Image 1 (tube, rainbow, N blue to C red):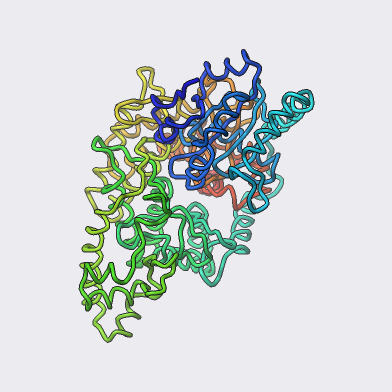
Image 2: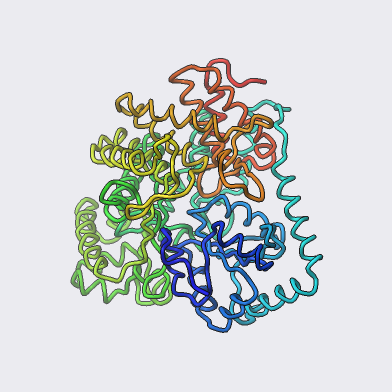
Length: 605
């Protein structure tokens, strides 16, 4: 048996190319092997910046005994969730059904017909902290497949039926005023708002920029200062906390604590694109300098560390370096003094909460526990002079930090995430009057159009180092289409509008559900999967249907064709049940609803 991952485009798959597990990519050869040999499939899904994916790989997938058992009893398939979000959606939902929770690495056992019958997330190699060992799980699954196969097949068929039933939801007309959906989302978010540290719910805390955008819009609509306070407190705390990289700019994935101090250190393109746009909106509304600084720091980070020479934006930076999470980012007082000298180091450590005890495993995550003006008063310094000194200190420390071994870089270029970044750069270029941001947006958009578009006009999903592959998904078309409209609306030539129209037509022709309304995540000529899903609820990224509805409504505003508006309303009707049940989880759909209600004639009843 051989491991077939070495030639794959995905950095995540290549990380597993030397494993003794006989990994195969998800392709026809692997699927046919399972049928031919009548073996269950062990499907492992993760991504390159995932800390626990690395842990399970190190503990289990490099273990010869575990690998031998996997190779004997299963066909082993490794999938990058960012490269194949269609598979990730389906099998993550199945893990939730089986376990009541999900996460990555995702570990699922499938019949040769691709129906899931058992699954979970991370398992340690041996029993630990109430979790079974991975070896135990493998033996139990293999024994069940041999001795109780009919039971396993029936379990798989039951889960598959539930998955299909979940997608067979009919579109509904509104049974209450549509404004009420917006109010319900506002009320839900405000109930979970943390009045002390900002954000929503307890730790771990995620940034939720789409929800913040909705609350900002609701404040502008109603004038309710409580909504503005929820937005500004959250943005202030995130930008001053450890979630934000105080030296290099950009935001980490999420905070493990309630006060935004200790992050999970991976950096994702989509977080930084969406947060840059959110801070830009907040700056336009409030003119608070901190927000413009956060926008510039985030976009400058993306330009410095996450941009391909030809213009596309890379996907992610790992949480780990040298095998330790966060090692690249943390400091001791002695390290800072060695770079800055004792006097400047004393001021820097006071402002950025650096102590001998530390705030993270004996080291320090840089953060601003108070506004700099307060520190200047405490130190008896002029605020302007102190900020100048601190800027010089940050620059010196960043130079030294760049000499450290950096986190791993996932340098694949995804159309959907690039669309979010292009939109942020284009808007920032216009609002902040920064031509280089506009230039970056145009360069990236042209890169995608040149390298990730087939001769027939259809998009590919991802590219890396001169190779492009994969059918594009709904959010590839919708996110890029919206970004191209933003380029047009912020002063671009007509080409951007024409390209956006071209993408919208593909969405209408290949993704629309003519029977139930809305848009499928996969195109009508995509490979057959266990179920063809629709996205109405946001993940960390905005839902495909929400972005498609937004694209069509924006186009309708520029080119008033009734079919654009009708298709957008169809998506909102198809997602109505989700909007009623989980309003705060479908904020992108609600942003599209806001736009629809603002158009002449409002929404259809």
